[in-house]
Image (tube, rainbow, N blue to C red; front, side, top):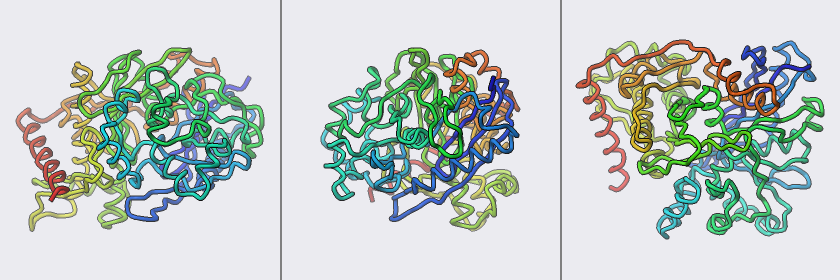
Length: 497
């Protein structure tokens, strides 16, 4: 009997595949990057064919490293960059336009128009989300309105919309299955959060024809079977799907109400398990589906900071301050503090809890004595401050203190960042040995969906690396937070002058 799980983690800058055992041992892992496209300021696109090629290469590499035959895979889990949007021809499977990435801001004006019309309260109540170009709804409409004949074809049922999970499933099944899970559907602005179904009023508001929509399925269970994928044999069951942040929440075994994790990737994303009833945020967060298993739905509060690791990439690629992202910690440690320098990394606007689409990054407190090391340290601190904003709003919404926070993602390797996070959030920060919780969560969901594991088995797959505890005084913490609040105020006021 096959006892290996394959996770496909399709991310913003590359695709990763991992092969794990039911005991949680990683046997093989492969990441394959692909190009980012920036056709205009504020626009971010991916070539769907490049995404698909990277998925195949990652899967092949992970299986080869694991030293197994593809037929030894018992189940497949898929996780993905969530709001990134594609539309393709149902007959040929060929996308009609590049994928519009979650970071893309081209529909900001349309979002502003909808908010000005007074639609935000209804949207928040129905979907748990705010009206923002981040989410998929306005992206779908943009494609249908800017590709010749697309809207008419969509209304005839000739085109299919999907987030990346849907596209990957379509390709893995040779077009046989058009489906998305509840977590990804909850990020579209088109799903009723309570009913877990596409909502006609939202479809009309965002001008998305029902005919293009995929079927909504649970996060675990038999969803599809591979056919004609090329790099995988036919007949392998696909039994787990979740958007990347929900997969990370599952991968960190945040199964109890009140459990919190934060993933430091391109952006930073904090989620709190709030149980079986969706908690409506009053502090700028969104409410989303965490997962649905065996007919039971778990919800989460989520805060998203659009730029985290991407700020470090900007220091590397835009300013040339570091040669590699891994160099930033050593550079930042050359100084004892940022000496008053504050960096608000609003390079793609401000997400939660501000939702300021027009915000731009700012660096304040610079003097003649400011060095690259101060800016490096301020960058790491800025990421931690962003997460503090999210956690502060989260505890206010949930009405409970936060005792610990589990962290993962590439930037979580940075000890300086993790320690400063513990200091400014005044909370224990816990890091697992396997920081790629997204892929692990998809594998765990696949195991549960295939009947090979339960939540107890999944929890045992998570191993602890180390914990970081607050080390600074309350007065020092308050001073840090005042500096951040002043920088945020300057960032936001600069937009209106």
